[in-house]
Image (tube, rainbow, N blue to C red; front, side):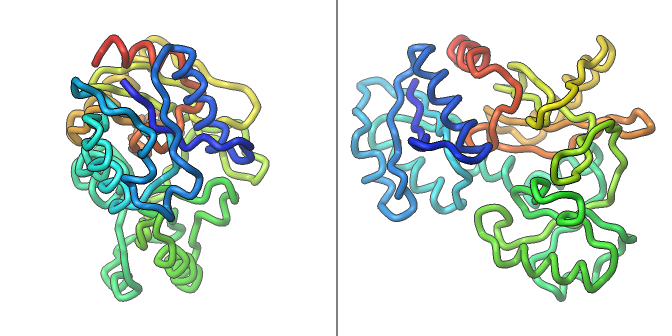
Length: 289
């Protein structure tokens, strides 16, 4: 197994720190690491992997990196194949669990009602009441607070959609409009976003590797009961089965009426492991592949 890492010398942001942590813990678990240069997007994928050795037997690859475009991940996947390395998720599989528009039809009954738009004219077909939660096809802007993610009227909605249309990496130039569900919470982030009772579940081949509290902000963490643990695992496994990616992340949250929902899905190569132990992740993955 080999990890292609985009870890940077100085880790400023949360995702910088997650990449550095995963990379260091991979090395501590005797997994070979090949570093991708920081100017990765400015060079051909074949050059980015120039220092990767050629393996005599096909080897599993994992990217510890930043959200790529669909095109860039495909280039990296095929460049890795030239070294006899097959990334753990194919381009199609990774795109299915990263792009909300791709996975929503597969888990529509497990997650809040949503509507995807790629141009303002699409809003004419909208049949949802305000307020609406707004996010990109890949991620939201929770780090900026509640107001950055919620539209309360048509003018606000148009402005936030136009902002998403200009973003490629985090939004794929699309806006996702979601019915707001009230998740249980007792705390807020420093930016004022409610820290819902939400857990990130990591799965390989529809088996739960581990899961942990979603929020990285310091504060009281939550431990599910035995019955809740069963619900969280079963819901995550069901979502994973429907999307058919070998390695997946499923974020699961509980609303104020005690109903559990799939909140998001993602490719663990690019979305961070939050409170899940990297050592546990690598050890389980080594045993399971």
